[in-house]
Image (cartoon, rainbow, N blue to C red; front, side):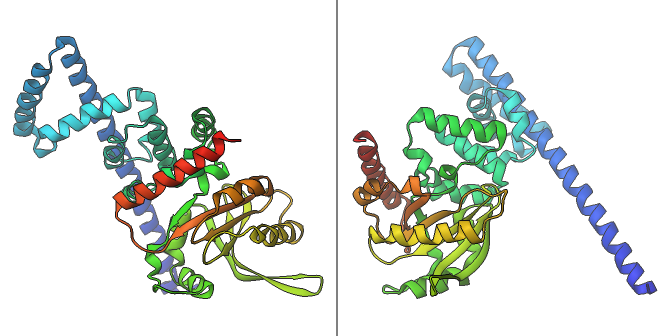
Length: 342
C-alpha cells in the first residue's frame, strides 16, 4: 500500500473517531440538560403545589426567571421555565424520561408537550424513539396528523394501548402502527389530470420523500415487478421491504375509487410473492392499494385485513391543516360507524 493510501486511511479512521466522540458528547450533554430541565420543573411545581395559590405561581416564576437570567443567561426566560414545569407535568415519571432522553432532545419534548390526548402522546413519543425522528420530522408528522391517519387511531382504546405497550416494552411494531389510511403525497407535484403511470413515475422521482411518508423501515425493492403466472406476465407497480415487520410490501396505485376487483389482483400478487420471494424467517407479504378515494362499505364486506391487504387514500394536493383535520374527522366517523356495526 502506498504512503498516500496509508495517509488517507489514517485520516478517515481518525475522522471517524472524532465524529463518534463528538456524537457521544452531544448525547451526554443533551441527556444532562433534559434531566436538569425536568428536575427544575418538578422543584417549581412542588413549591407552587405546596402553596396552593395560582397567583403565587405566577409571581415565583417571574421572580425566578429574572434571577436565573442574570446569572445563567436567556435560557431561563419565563416561557422556558413554564415549559420545564409543563415537562414535569406531562412526563411525571423520571424513569420514562431517562429511557427517552438518549433518543429525544429537549426540543423533541417541547413538541410533545401540547398533545393532550394520552394515546396520541404515547404514539408520537414511541414512534419518535423507535424510528429516530429528527425534530423536523417529528414536527412534520404532527402537523400532517400522522396519528389520525394510522389504523391504530380507529381501534378501541384498550387494543390501541396494548399495541403501544408492546412497542414501548418490546420495540414491536404492528402493521397498524406502520400503515395509514391516508397518505399525503403533495410533494409529487402532479398536474390536475394524471395517469397511474404518471403517479408511479412521480413516486420514483421523489422516492426519498415517498419513503419518508411511508415511514422508517421501508426499503425500495422493485418497480413493475414481473411475475410469470400460467405463462402470462403480470406486473406489480411497486415492491418494498419493511425491515421491522420483516415482510415484503406490495403496492398498487389506482386512480379513482377502490373497486372490489382490486382484491383478487392483489391476492394473486401476494401469493406469488409468498411462494417465490419470501425467505423462511420472514412474515407473509402485505399489500397496500393506494386509491384516490376509498369505498368503505366494499372494503368492510371484503374483509381485506384477513387477506393481509390494506387500502388507503392518497392526497395529491396540499391541504391546509384545518381542511385535512376535517377530512380525517369525516373518515374517522365513517370508520367508527363500520366498527360499531360489526
